Image 1 (cartoon, rainbow, N blue to C red):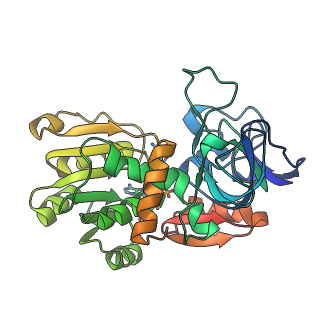
Image 2 (cartoon, rainbow, N blue to C red):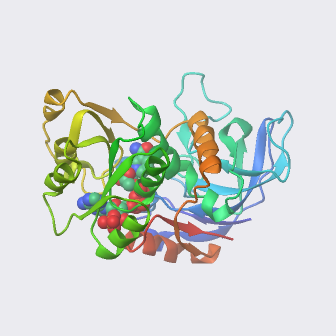
Amino acid sequence: MRAWVVPPGAKGVDDLQRIERPDPQPGPGQVVVRVRARSLNYRDQLVASGTYFGAPNTRELIPLSDGAGDVAAVGPGVSRFRVGDRVAGCFFQRPRDAAPDAPPLALGSPLDGTLADYVVLNDDGVVAVPEGLSYEEAACLPCAGVTAWHALFRAGRPVRPGDNVLVLGTGGVSIFALQFARAAGARVVATSSSDEKIARLRGMGVSDAINYKRTPEWEKEVLRATGRGVDCVVEVGGGGTFARSLQSLARGGKVCLIGFVAGRGGDTSPYPLMGKAGSLHGIFVGDREMFEEMNRAIAVNGLKPVVDRVFGFEEAKQAFALHASGRFFGKVVIGA
Ligand SMILES: NC(=O)c1ccc[n+]([C@@H]2O[C@H](COP(=O)([O-])OP(=O)(O)OC[C@H]3O[C@@H](n4cnc5c(N)ncnc54)[C@H](OP(=O)(O)O)[C@@H]3O)[C@@H](O)[C@H]2O)c1
């Protein structure tokens, strides 16, 4: 099969190598998925540059956590799926030989991921993809979609109709959060560095969109626009935005700590949470149950993941480059 790998000691996307590997065979309880499309997440850039969780890559690794395709073969004992089913892999997988209390491991680091023709998964680490989505759209769901779903509906008090939700920037997690929040009847306030992207946000039902470059104190604008602050912040900025996210909260609101696109450092005081009786939730993607729950909501509401551009398999480096540039809206996909 075709595969791209991050070699040991890789320092960036230029080091990605296109190789051939034998087609995998399923073991007991496993399925082989013919991957038709994959999507990029912020972490994939860190994996490619050897800086994910601060650790350089030490083996030849197939990157990317997210992919969708169809079941090409099933091993003995598999009853959940049949050959031909349209599926996506869960971000977290539980290796068959893992101790019962061992934490699950993620595709695309440390486990081999989806930037290959095939991936072998345990059948309990696979979900059916929602009817009506293309492979390219379904490939956007496993990390960004499930993370947004977890933040809005599973962390603390679920977002309700009439709530105010703040999303930061226009990357994968934030655009899913926008779509889910709107489908749940919430009002969405968003930030972006680009007026062009702000126009697209408005077209997706965002009530107030703030250019965080032109309005660095955007939290004041969030409070002015909402009157009482927001009930949920989808906090993907990290050190560069966390203090302003706390200031943006309404009484009883929650901040879902997800990422660090605006920097990891900082010494933000958490005390504003106290006065607002707010809460802080660390989110790390989510489990299969959340993925399946989200898929039902996507099907019922006819939601479509927002795909900026689809690259060919041999154009993986160009896909990484576009994603690294920030000149995209939603998701960047690598197809067949
Ligand atoms: N904890 C978890 O389970 C989990 C899961 C998924 C992702 N994450 C993390 O969440 C973050 C977002 O991931 P992603 O894959 O959605 O990212 P992404 O698709 O790469 O999107 C990045 C976007 O962030 C926005 N951005 C950059 N600097 C910003 C700033 N100073 N303020 C506000 N927005 C800013 C930009 O939007 P504009 O171009 O509109 O300015 C950019 O397009 C990353 O740190 C990632 O590692 C964590």
